[in-house]
Image (cartoon, rainbow, N blue to C red):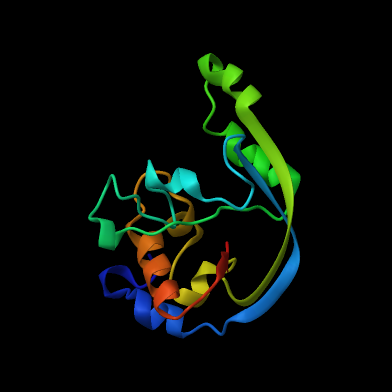
Length: 146
């Protein structure tokens, strides 16, 4: 982290101005879920959400993870695949979704909020990204671009 132990999600997110965004986004999801159903969030915490299985119910929240390209959505899935789980691809669906949001924060330059790219992309410690999500929710932000 650029700001080290002094980094604060409330202060960092307060530096950004939300903007509207609309366009097509892609989601790779289990067939049992509708494309805009974040139902799987309840089973395992992720970068920008906390599952009730990992925390108290009132400290959990859903997230719908999308990509701005079909290749990005597939790449995210493939990085978690193992050879033994390739058959699970039969139960996946790639869906294009038309999105229109009024309040989106652009995190593509993490230095704008005192972070480095690895702070947003690390695979095992979601402390910082979940703090961003909490603060975004407090500000009624509808989406994050990273």
